[in-house]
View 1 (tube, rainbow, N blue to C red):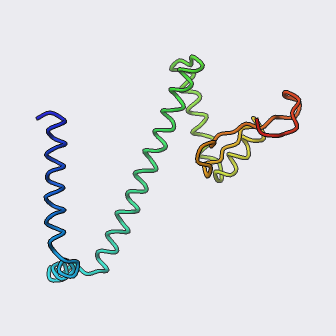
View 2: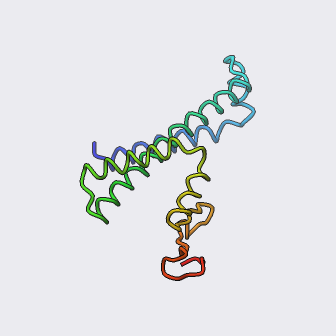
View 3: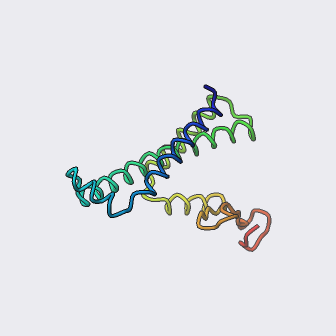
Length: 142
């Protein structure tokens, strides 16, 4: 079975399950769970546990993706080879692990490079301020 067929089969299974669940009322589902000894407290606890596990897993994957992106950018943009990429990633990891919080890191980046990191901004998350003595600016954003 190829990937397209697997996806179609999975989608069909999901739709079948959704249809079945839509036929059963919310109260009936709760009643069935309670009959099997599952309480609302059990459901809440499992939801919270699942949410926490998901957040942990997502965080790890996001960090891995960022490190991979840094390595690829260093290679593609600046010609870094394996040794220089390794050293750069080790330095990034060390700075990240030992920083007290993300504000400490972003403030250090701003102080040393004039680069602003504002991920609350939707489009221009990475900015650059003119550094005094570097291009004769007034400290405004480039």
